[in-house]
Image 1 (tube, one colour):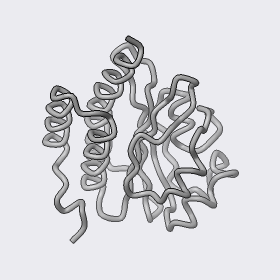
Image 2: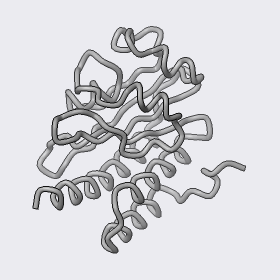
Image 3: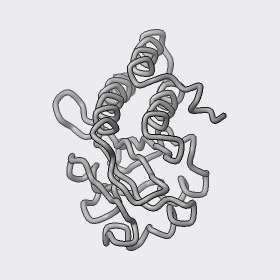
Image 4: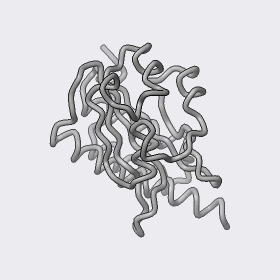
Amino acid sequence: MSFNDHAPGVAEASRLALEMLEQGAGQGAILPLLVRAAERASGNDSVSSILVLDQHGLLRNGASPGLPADYLDAIDGLRPDPKVGTCSAAAATGAVVLTPDFRADEKWAELRHLPLALGYVGAWSQPIKSADGRVLGTFGTYFREQREPSDSERRNIEALAATAATVIGHHKGRCQE
């Protein structure tokens, strides 16, 4: 039995995340809850990750409990770029980016060895946007098989990304006070 068997569903995770935010919990406590709900919704062979744009416009790990530290170190500080990976491209374009197969996508030319070494074949990324449309980060999901997300997976991640936007936006606002 995996951790995801005990992870809340999407609606429950969103509700809990907003309660935790109201009670003063930080991003580091809340975002992993959303990631685990995404993993549960996408199936046991997937792993999800939230990357957050820092004050310099670089992507930093927000919550990626299923990815090893060396992978996270290798992607830390990526600059949004429509020609690099899925999360970097989603952050740059503000649009969903699909990569069913890392080997067949030139956006992964420099980085494909990283997820392939972990057994991941493809990924997709949903931008996390503020209410005014600014990209705050990305919600990425990696797959062990060549595929695209289902309509249900897309809806679930959209909902979780909206909750993540509330959490990230709240914390960015507090940092700027």
